[in-house]
Every structure is written in structure tokens, then in C-alpha cells.
Length: 74
Image 1 (cartoon, rainbow, N blue to C red):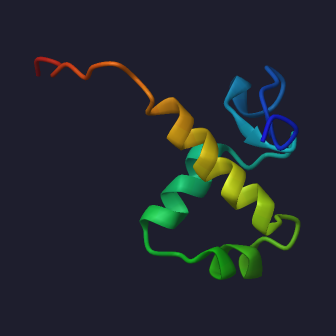
Image 2: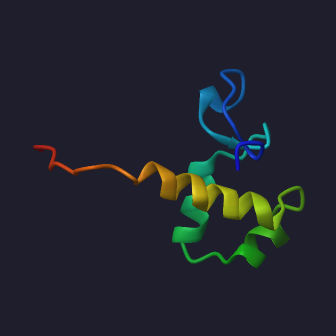
């Protein structure tokens, strides 16, 4: 995953991206959350690979490994 998810201040304002391209991890996750399948994404974005999508999911899973969640007052 470390070689597939990159962070570069010159690309997408330093957001985690796929292989240094302008595909932020958050965009991949939003596509999946909107019911796009991996196959849909790969069909629409030919420069992405299945491993890129899985790396984005693994990255998001790692970010959720926290000890405790607290509610933020609105």
C-alpha cells in the first residue's frame, strides 16, 4: 500500500493520492460509496488498477483504527 498511496504537496494540495496521480483517495472512496463498483471505476478511469482501489480501501481502514470516537458539538 505504501507505494500506491502517495502524499505530495504539489499534487491535489497534499491529499493522499493514488500513485502520485490526481486521484485522491477520498474520491475513490466517494465513488465506491455512491455504489460504483470497482469494475465501474476501472472502466471509467483506464489508468487506475484494481490494486489502486484496494489500496484506497486499505488506507481508509487504517485511518479508522482509533482508540475512541467523541461526538463533536454542532
